[in-house]
Length: 141
Image (cartoon, rainbow, N blue to C red; front, top):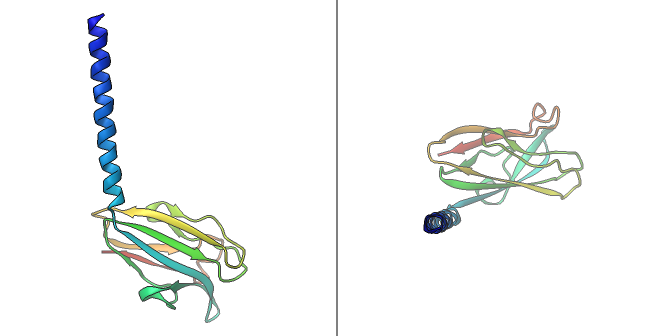
C-alpha cells in the first residue's frame, strides 16, 4: 500500500514539474519578436503580382520580405482583384487558404528558427499564377 502512494506521489510531482516547464515555454514563445507583413494581389505590367502594403515594402511589386531568424513571421494577403489566389512559403510549411472575393484576406504565421538564414520562395499555388508573376523572396538574416 505504501509503495503505491509513493508511486502516485512521484507521478504527481513529475506532472507538476512538466506543467511548470511547459508554462515557461509559453512565456518564451510570447517573448518571440513578431514581424507582420502585408501583401495585396493585383496586376502590374500585364502580370499577376503581389504588392507590398505598408512600411518599407509599400507599393513594391513582389517585394523581398526581410526577416530576422528567431522571429515569428505573420503574412497577411488581401485579394485586390476578383481572381482566386493564395500564398505559400513551402520551406516553412505555410500556405493560406484560397481567397477569391475582392477584399478578402488570409494569413499565415510561422517561426523562423536560428540557423535558418537564407533565401526562400513565396508564391501563389493556383495553376499558372506563379508562372504569370506571383512570386517573391523571403530573406532570413
